Length: 343
Image (tube, rainbow, N blue to C red; front, side):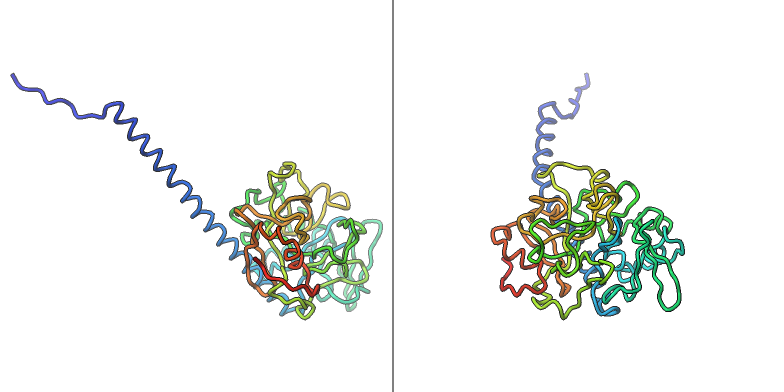
């Protein structure tokens, strides 16, 4: 009789051992993969801010000042990122929102992109339109950020305005292109004890930052490099923003605290419905996102957030700066005369 060779196969115990070994290996490798992924996302975020910084310098070269942070005029305003579009390779989007002739479809562009006395502005109280009469040519603009502007161009998702680590959607309400970066309006040193933003809020000369909440129908406040007497390497231009689970959870679609690159506030004076403006306050009491959602910078990067400085550099400010709030607050002031060094 022929001798039968036994079949070669794994026993149940051997199979379970192999599965256990694979699970252990995955457990060891997963944190390393996540660290690599976060490092790549943080690098992309840094590069985004550097590109924004280059766009800011180009804007300043062309106009001799930085953009308006956001208007203090009507309930809906355009923000600094809309003005920056031609300088970050988004000329088509800028053309779409500035070229329509009808007031409900057009982004308002002030003479010289702001600065100086706005004697050629007047408000039609009945519908909050702003007409500009300049050089005999009557052109109608509107400070209204809406989904019809530029045939819906405000819904464009602009990659360099988004941080890969952020968990917010790319569009708010499926209509407005989001941003994860907001401008520095200042550190509240010159403001009243309870600042507000919106109708009659803190604006103009009271903002000691770089991208000011500015237009009061008499003068549009913009900042020039010589006015940054604290030094461009010591003053923040803009930084990251996000939401956080440490405060009352809100959804992106329903929250007015989720910024969009077009800027503006919808509904009530303080942006209680559609959108919130593209600026934040350098206030250590709210970094990162410890308090007021309207005020705080912050990110999804572990341990802090990226910030663009006025000299074009990008630096990561850790949460440990909160132990020395004077340093963080000083970064928001362009002319406070503070002496400090980052940790």
